Length: 216
Image (cartoon, rainbow, N blue to C red; front, side):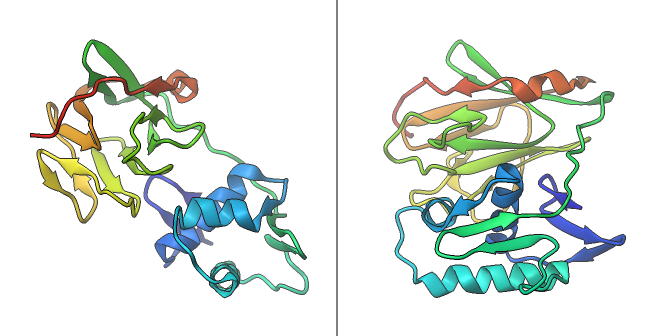
């Protein structure tokens, strides 16, 4: 099981260590399954605006296979599409967040409220991001907010210009509290949190951050 909330891979009930890039590779291939993902698209997702050799991707694929106990010659999970890219070829079942008591979270930008879903909420310029950040200083996948049963955590996703929480650059996943100010480029957001009935309906809702002002 690949859990985007805890960023963990579990096999037969045992946690398998993954590097951040290997996790992102598996996450991307699962998102696009059963289709194949081109090497260029993988590079854009994992190393935005950075040059890396093709061997870096091959090394990540090998690490992913080792974690999954997969064989490149007889793949059960990770298939190489020669001359193109990679694809996830195993069976996958998406688990929906449970409906029940938990945290109801949102980002406030000016007069706009953007609800956050249980699990991962990506902030950035990528198509399909939970919160679209209209700033040239924002990366495609700039940061994310992971909403868990009893807490929410902000994490920078190796962005070029960094993510600021309460005016300070974050260097590690940071727990969020009601009223916390998050800054990405010129976009400033206020995190709001209440305890109440959670709902999976928010998973299909998307918002755009439009509140712009200079960072203090």
